[in-house]
Length: 311
Image (cartoon, rainbow, N blue to C red; front, side, top):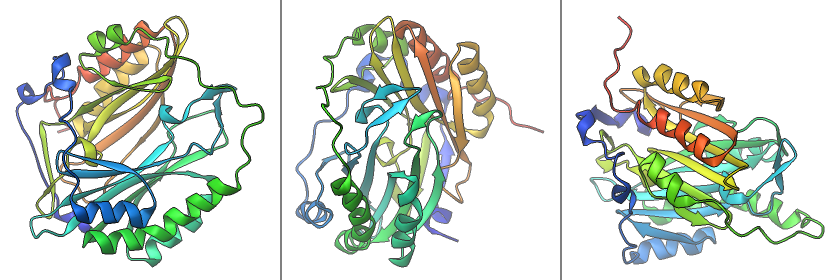
């Protein structure tokens, strides 16, 4: 049994969800980064930030020029990998991550992780119709922060090597200025988001689910979250996202998204040996931004309602 077998999860009352309030989307300010985590970032050669007791190290794939149905998709739209560190009860670190990979990178990166004592808990797509094909690999590890960082580095080196070898897009134009009415999106979904270049991303934690790994709280920054990323214009936008669900929530969420014209592109797990099971669903849609936001809100409204399970 891997490290996830030690998870303990329980669902609180649906009232504990904080989806309804835009104010609840505000994240805590960055905390002073512990010295050992500065060393982690130095080992990985990446930048990150420390909030809510979690160091989140960013591994964006800005070297990739991705199109979805021939439409350019900016890196923050869904091509930013990450690894996150947080403290377990015994002061060791629990590490989780999601690496963004091309087809040719998948198996070399997987071998680099496995050969260094780390776990690969999921591999899947987030999109249809994207070029080049992109895959997402979920990672888990535990140990001293410095040691886990050293064990992660060979996998990161493979990604970095690919990035260095990538040819920059010819005559690449600067990203367009944000042109979405983000206040409308936040009000419709019930949560404020963050602007990253031409992308507005709303992230919603599952505070009603108490997930622990060796005593470490697995919160939104560790990957237990629902998100929606918008780009484009008010009249012609794209949305992509991920919904974190308990098993009885899956079908109601699927119905909510499909009834609002949003495509489902993947249904899968990110973690293994979790009780109760948490399912993650990825979606994609195009059209007027306000319509897409209403579809996302319809899905979010299905969470935490205590839907009946199969008999």
